[in-house]
Length: 230
Ligand SMILES: CC(C)(COP(=O)(O)OP(=O)(O)OC[C@H]1O[C@@H](n2cnc3c(N)ncnc32)[C@H](O)[C@@H]1OP(=O)(O)O)[C@@H](O)C(=O)NCCC(=O)NCCS
Image 1 (cartoon, helix red, strand yellow):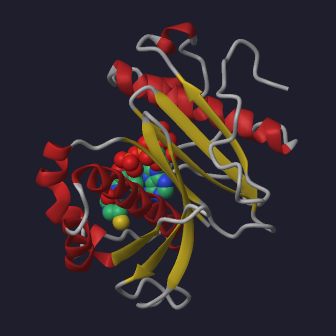
Image 2 (cartoon, rainbow, N blue to C red):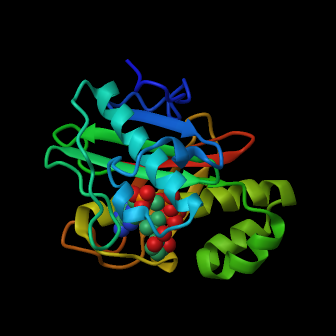
Image 3 (spheres, rainbow, N blue to C red):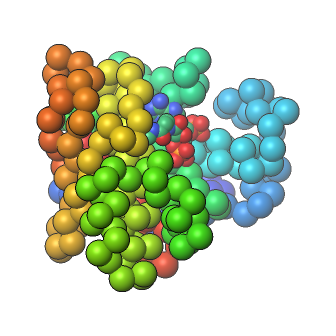
């Protein structure tokens, strides 16, 4: 069943993880928010923000609703906490991301998946890579990127950036602690499994100490990249 009147993207962003993750995504127009009344969930907090922000917030929350429906659970409102992170029900883990005219959400049951972070990014162009690479990539990652051709560099840098954001959301949801780009090292594995590895370069908590390693997944298409960390 789909939420009435909303055209969600039909296929799951991550079809191949074989894990009980419930996803929904949506492409929206520049005036998307206008079709929702000011009493719509969360809309009240958005009154003085830009149209772009209204669009992405509403589209993200609609994706959450649809992901709940896909899970077979009655949709629940997801408030925003003081730090900007979504407040999920006790038994649920979830994540939201948006970029340009696209929003995406993924949910899972906590008893099956302990933590979850997703991210989507429009392709980052050569000029922006040049401007931000020193803030995003570690020395090792920078040296690896330098060895790539230009088209590969665009692909791998956008994936690296998105991977760090999804790992950030994963760790934040579990520890309520922020990390910086320099605290993570990402290795993109260019194989059919579309996986990346991440390594924590500082102590975050007793469970997540310096050297902790984990796996994430990535996908990409003409418009953007998508990453998922569990
Ligand atoms: C919070 C942050 C991760 C969001 O990522 P982004 O790529 O800018 O934006 P996205 O569209 O992908 O994600 C936005 C959504 O993330 C969620 N979010 C916000 N803060 C969050 C947090 N601390 N933890 C988990 N999710 C969070 C929200 O649902 C938000 O959407 P909403 O406001 O509509 O509900 C990012 O802006 C940020 O502040 N990062 C902290 C510093 C950083 O970048 N560190 C390096 C990464 S290692």
